[in-house]
Length: 154
Image 1 (spheres, one colour):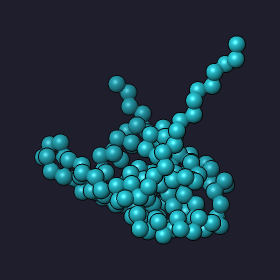
Image 2 (image 1 turned 30 degrees about the vertical axis):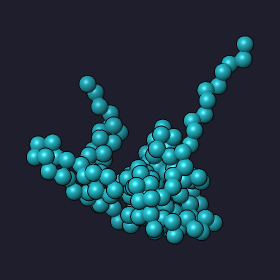
Image 3 (image 1 turned 60 degrees about the vertical axis):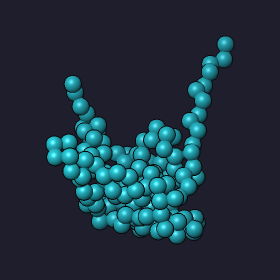
Image 4 (image 1 turned 180 degrees about the horizontal axis):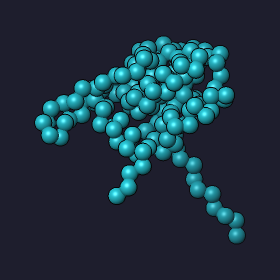
């Protein structure tokens, strides 16, 4: 069985998720909870901090770094820029520098890495947030319907 580097990274990141409004990950060998380790320089934003930023939509830009299927299945904020984490550095020219940036993923870990990258490139970054964490803390996430497949005309 061949595992691609990206899939391995997703697996490793998913194993590191923990506390923040969901049950802690469990170590399979010892059956003890694994800590939710935050290893990023960016601030991890909770619902209150994110709501305060979103109250000024002209000043903030939410960049969702998840895959499109995750955005569709888990929802997101009504307005955001979607750039997958692996494509972020190649698309820096399309990201405005005149707004404060919030990066978003499911539980903020990919968003934390993206926030650190953007900060290192001179962007003003408020922090990283998790959409599932935000919703678990009582925030409202918009569900996005997947577009219907196009049917060829006969």
